Length: 152
Image (cartoon, rainbow, N blue to C red; front, side, top):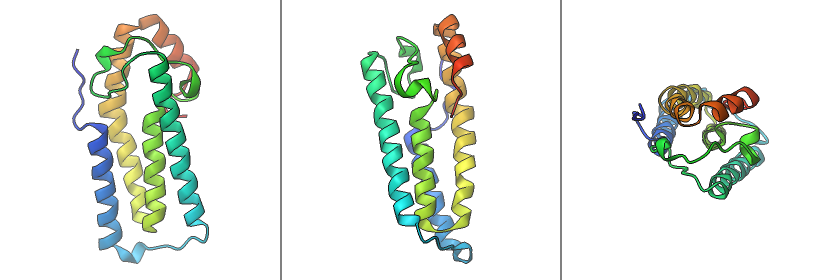
């Protein structure tokens, strides 16, 4: 089974960032000010880095692929570490980066990009990955799905 992936996640995040920049530039009337935005931005980026790093470490520890375009090469269901809390911590880290960027651009319209990103990545990346994992590991993946939520 091939992945129904339309646009790979790194390109999705770049498109989202460009869209946010365009919205902030062309719709300046939706600018806002938040006193603690800089510390919050730093916190979100640090949290995203930590979550993403822990996810990669867990994949390496289990000696399985982390490439989003080749889920058929997965050798096991990773269900420990950060994966005990989220089935998609790397995508969660990308969402946190988008929140940080929306705060950085200080434009309310930028927050509208986040649900678009989540919807797209869920439909065209996560769901096809889930189909593949269910095919490769029907019992283990079903048990895991019942224990751990897709995002949080």
